[in-house]
Length: 504
Ligand code: AMP
Image (cartoon, rainbow, N blue to C red; front, side, top):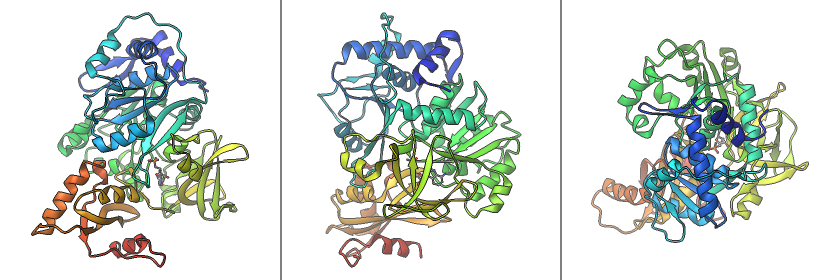
């Protein structure tokens, strides 16, 4: 049982410094380098950054990101990963909420111009890593200190920063390392951006068990030809992704157990695992173990998991989301009442991996978090039930949060930013579903008066302006122009009615 993430990772740097911690097509980095780089980041931060507050780390899936995270953890501060392709507007909102003490830019800073927060450039950071400054004792993040903050979509258009403590993270990592039969020293696919908590499913279980991370970068993922030629040559043991990404990968017919025999474990999380994807995987990788796991960022990546077998798929209409980890309890609630086991209600997670709340956002924290019998609890907004055997079943959402290509989006978040687009008077976004999965986002828009002769030109202009405000996956694919939006009896936009219309 691990009791400290930082010292466990460091111990490999001391006892086995040549062990590989990270490798991509062109380079590899060892645990010795991870220790050296992170020691120097910690030394730099301790001596040069006096202001209190978390530290932003800006980049993609580079090794330097991991070294920066670890260095920050050695100073008792929290880190905030921000992906470098995040639009300026969103970065600005995150900085306003987080008030970071500094920004470590692994990639060139393309965020807003700021004077009040020191930005350490990639070149300066490289020099810090290479420094030989004397390393003093560190003040590593304590159990209740925040280890990282991950920002996720917020209904008001302002991202919410989920604070995960060292204790939260330990509860998750100890579970993943014991319940999924992961071999020691395994190599893990690292595909999810570090600003998405699915990445944590790889980073810490890998680095605390002497394993390695193998990144698959955006250029490969976004170019099917390059992705499909990479897949049959993968040399990894543990696959971690959303089901959506796997669905794309399965388009490559040679991606199977014969071509990739090293691949022994698949872990899915973040959205519903379609039965068709699960079945196809059982056929393609008969030797491997495939797990569906479930959980929100607010309860540290995942709290339940189940191995997929053909019997399981035959027995249930939708793929079950798993047995709850030992240290955690699930309640089903409705209107403040706890329901009997077996009844369908809102899934509430009670346990040591539940976050202390959203950074600098007491209102949203109070709405979603509470204590149950003295233990932290979180309202997931998911609807579900539990079988007599303790298997958790997922029934969908009770609000307007959706998963699109695995990304978490509050539909109201897109509405807010669409309303800020100059050509838009009012807008509401709805999902179009195919087999319980969002296939498309549709925006119903009341446009401002404009001179566009053709609707598609108006759409192009709106999309362009919106792309500067939200993540690319939040830009709707289809725009329907209306004179007014339908209202409910109490005068709110009738989103449910529009959802029904879009899915007729
Ligand atoms: P995130 O915080 O991005 O991980 O999103 C959490 C939400 O994703 C959950 O509240 C669920 O709505 C959804 N989710 C995560 N895992 C699963 C799963 N295995 N099956 C169905 N939905 C899931």
